[in-house]
Image 1 (cartoon, helix red, strand yellow):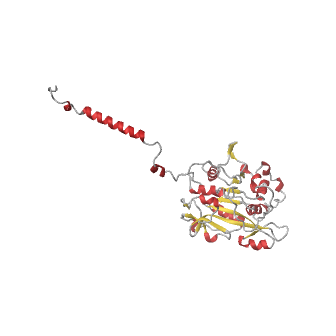
Image 2: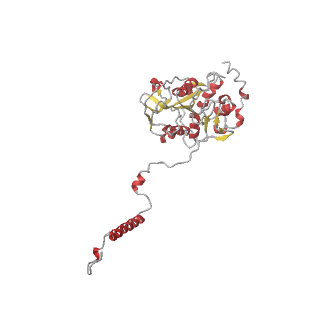
Image 3: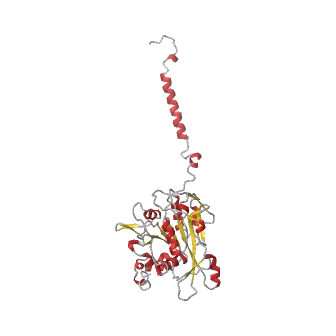
Length: 351
């Protein structure tokens, strides 16, 4: 309509004023956004302060991985999970190969000249994935069984994972009587005990029972020299046993097993002990997703790494049938032949 003469301009429709007000508000908001700092606020940082940065991982140079016929090499298998977790192996000829694999390509590792040299040296670690079908069986009183015990007693560490078969392996070759938890089940959770090895201090404080994937043992059945690392008041899911040997009092006989508490007496008799450790991790590693037990396994592989102090021996620093050089130098391909051992192992199958 036509405005009469003299009517004030403020009586125009308010639409133009509303549009102008919105424009002013938008400009003020844009200016405030441009003045705000580009760095996140303190509250935002608090949400991420406890997240650890990703760091590349490489296995210790003195660690071997058991890759024999008893290991599940399938894509979803426990052995493949552990191989991937430890970042070992390269694809060659359609299979995983690594100079630090033991038992690869069907080689009978414990009967090889290579393992003989490894067993006579100090300060290496062998990680054995879960035995899902069976475990290597030899006469425990003859050359191969003795060599396996010599390996541990010469200051090395044997890390076994899995469940019932790993416990049976320890009992068979090291003459123990470790018993499974009542009903072969412990609900957990398993708490870390104090005074664990330095490398394990960064591992989780509490480990869960994951369905029935964790096989625990009775604490009361653990032998002299055992140390519970993670456990409940009655059971343990992760433990290690100090295993010691000394030269036999009878000349020409193999070394004999000595309880750690008896090592001072053996040393006074002129036969000092040489000790190593057998570690058991009761998780079966069949789940493909990351778990807390992954960190425990990596930490266990680092215990004898050069950057950590070695575990204390019970008495003395002697080795049994020791040779010069470190164990990690003994991984050449020339050690896979069994010809040099045929004579001394001629009676192995007969037993």
